[in-house]
Image 1: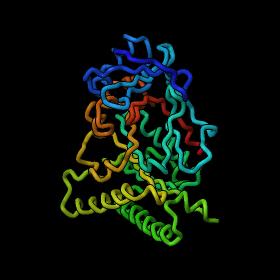
Image 2: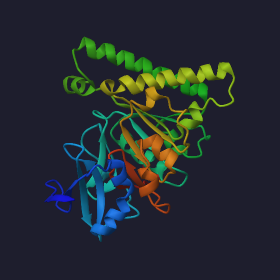
Image 3: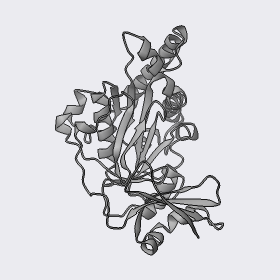
Image 4: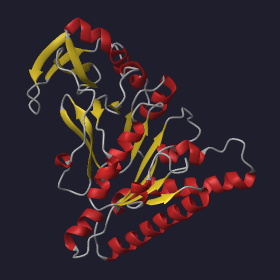
Length: 318
């Protein structure tokens, strides 16, 4: 039952419809999104629970207003601060993540979903914001051509990766001591006071399953993967205050590969075209499988249900 309809104060093109949930859970509303859109002749931007679970809020736009299939990145989208990364455009405008508040990002999507391009858009912005970017690429550099090697720290094997992650956890400990000695709560606080600001560190992995999969490994090899997991877990738990961030991507639907300690500390979850298993792993629901059309490369859904179109970036201009 529709209770009220109101204009979204922040987005003039968006209307908010408040419904009595009548005992229907949010997951069911999400699953039936297409039927609801057809019945109301609208496009749903996102579906959320109201102040209590007896209310459902639909953020909607007119049915004839859709997302573009292609948006090219340009630097006019960059923000002035050092922590905000733009993900893409939704019906609400630009979608972003502030690493000072939500420090890590998990990206999921099947082959051809645009996941790797979205990852590169985030890394381009990080470089332009003077972050130190490190990339684990276990595909021999195929996905990251030479231009990336000139601007980022690259690692192509477990030995180099373990060294890199150890350096990052050592830097985390160094910053922990520095901030404690200067009585600063976090990197932002320190940089406002210091004449020599700290750079943010971004560690990215385009296929984290390739790095952490223990299937068929010997005991010694599994122990080595355990060392990698321990360092990633430490960064996931403590990195926010010290400006050390993870952007992990996967297309393999295996819940055993990404440990709970890592996954549970990554609050920004983004999923493109995916099957129900991968969508469940990334978002804790099946909305990506249900709402992202199979022919929409670059279309993604956030953990809060917002659908957006990611940018395409020209790698030669980074």
